[in-house]
Image (tube, rainbow, N blue to C red):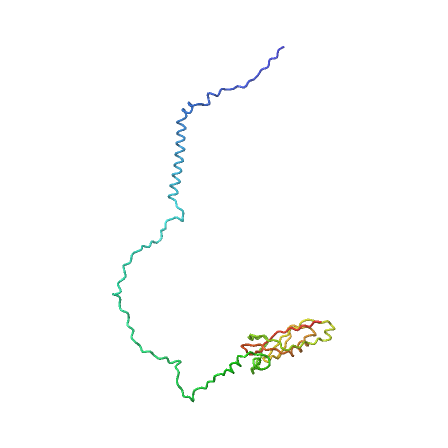
Length: 243
């Protein structure tokens, strides 16, 4: 017995007639393609022309033409000659008035004040350096004035007081046994003669203040100088107590 099998084959359609190939197709479509190319070219040129015209007409704000006030310059005529100028005003001569202030007035010899001129010795003594003691250039002239500045009062001076004689304070026995030590700061008024006129404790140590005050009262200073003259001033003097 023979079996029969059906074979199915795909249906291929000949499409060679529907795809234009060759010069005949180009010749048939030449007119259509030319019109399309002309339309695209015209559109591009019109776009470029429109952009150029738009940039020519439209201007930014900074480039707007100036419409403010216009000043017109005119040439002035030449000035008139100097020969036609009016003559200068005539100022009448006025008598000169002598000054009445500062004019010396002669007086009689009996009424004239007596004037004294310093000698060279007096001038050299006045300008000589000032010292603590001695004679000659190291001498110190103390003015007979007892005015003393109060504490905190400003006193101008060029040279500050310098200790000449120092007396060390005694160390109290009870303070030594208790091992008390520290620094006592004193506010001292040095007079014009270099002596201590007043003492105040501004920073003290218990048990040591009294001995510090006793010792500073025995000190002698070279006084402060203002314009080469001694002045009384307050100075701060520290005293150390250590084993």
